[in-house]
Length: 78
Image (cartoon, rainbow, N blue to C red; front, top):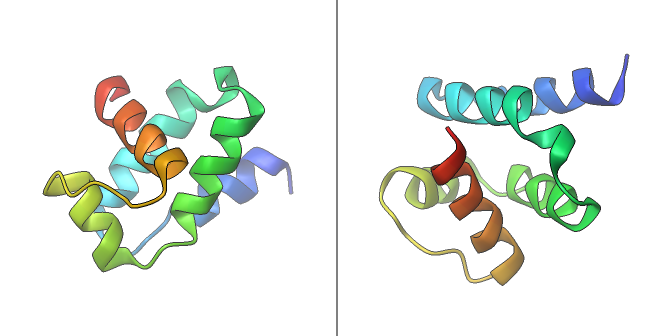
């Protein structure tokens, strides 16, 4: 299984809205990210779904500035 396939698998959250946002982001933007932002995206995927929902749907800002940056990038790219 390729690295991107594994990443897409991790994007499957069980919450349809997050599945769509993350999958679209990976397909459209992930390959062009610098390594630090790819790491931040992986950190985001390690966070529990209720918190991610707050970041993605309710404009709650993550405490981690790297995660906050990638959340903003996802919001503007999809």
